[in-house]
Length: 298
Image (cartoon, rainbow, N blue to C red; front, side):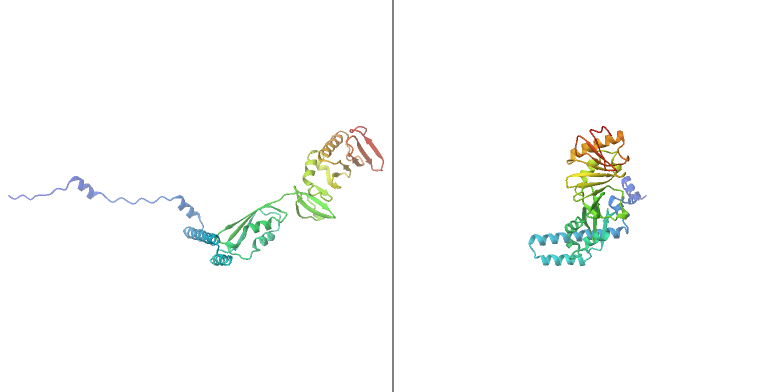
């Protein structure tokens, strides 16, 4: 009897033969994938941005190298113009923070260039031009490739109206001239009158802030002889203050105290003179004078 030899597979080999291939795990989306997903246009937009960034970086390196190597300016300009022809040319201007100033003036300052090619736009020159306008306190100018200039503006805040030589001008807290004002469109702001009164606007604000009760009653402040203030109240009376910031401040505080106890304003007086620190001289409507010392006798 003949036996047929049967070769039995080992248990380890059998397990290998029966093992099924594992399914490939899906790749987890990374931060970059999420960023691409939220872009308008998705991956196509991301590729364009990458191309712009690379091209812009190469262009900047080429121009810097040309300048460092002393390549003539005409060649550098030609390179920059070539970059502009490739699509890096100013087409859009974004203005941020503009409220009161004329927008067309900002456009004019930005577009007054010999070339619109992005590498040739002089950002410092644009900023200097903008700072020549009274309304603009600060300006930041930057490029956004491929074709956009961004201008961020900080405007000054109107603080008073300056009247001089029959003209009305809006000024800020530092006395910087902003724009003309029509008499028919006077804003609810203090009125300072006289030559140099605009430059003294900060000193006047400090003076009038010393008497909060009187501040809303003052209609106008006149800078006299480049040395002192006369205040005109809404009720028509005029207060003559002495020279010197501290002296004028003390006199105004004293006047506020007397008015608070005896009611000087609105009683028919015409003028109060406090240039002499020891007395208050009062002129009546009829022209008669009355004197008082430290507020007594009124």
